[in-house]
Image (cartoon, rainbow, N blue to C red):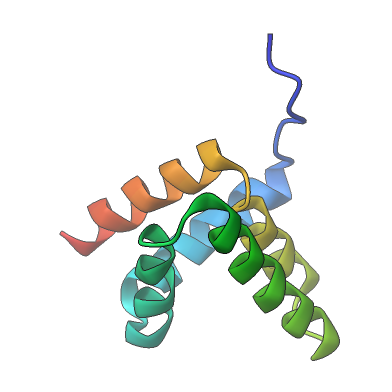
Length: 88
C-alpha cells in the first residue's frame, strides 16, 4: 500500500510539459541529466534549490510544482525514462 499522495492532473500535465522541455532545451537537459550523477540527498538539495529560486523569481507555480515532484524517487525515475524516450 502506497502512502504517497497521487499526483494531481495538473501536476501530471506539468510533468509532461517539463519532460518535453527537458528533452528539447540543451541547458535544462544538461541540468536534468547532471542530477542522475548525484547521490539522492544532493539531488534533493539541487531540486529544492532550483524550486526555491523559481518561487522567489515568481515563476509559474505549476512548473515549480512539477519540478518539486522530481524529488519523489519514482516520479524522478519515470521522468528520466520519459526524457530518454523523447531524446531518441
